[in-house]
Image 1 (cartoon, rainbow, N blue to C red):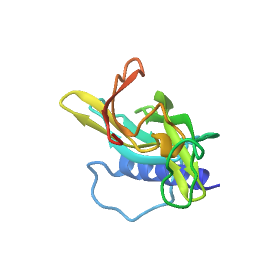
Image 2 (tube, one colour):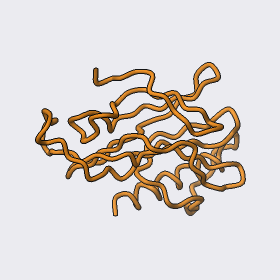
Image 3 (cartoon, helix red, strand yellow):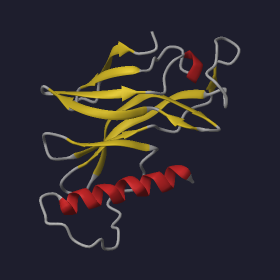
Image 4 (cartoon, rainbow, N blue to C red):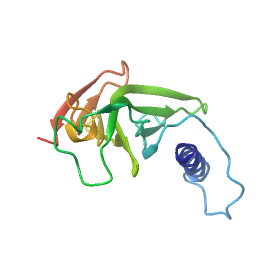
Length: 162
């Protein structure tokens, strides 16, 4: 249920940004849902192409590392998987996945995965918060990934957990 509420919140925000970009302030009207199916949306950024990029935390996973490494503070343990992704809403209003397979983790207190995205000096980056052994993803750390927007391939360039 929280994923559905946050998905609607993100697309409602995106609709507000699309409708008010460069326009004078107006009274708020009814919200318009422009996309559904987001999984734990987080940071939103407009790319150089004018599309809206959305960091998604994902759905976590089923892998627990409670028996093999120290866990983060309660509530834990986290269970991890590779369900986080980055999506975009194009100028035509179509939602599409840009890159997927990022670490995601869930516990009773929340979901962590791709937390934000950024465009810097012609490159595209993602901040990953759902990785590391304590989050059920021992082979996939939290950190910063460089993402190829054309192919969807990504490379972890900074291991924040290290």
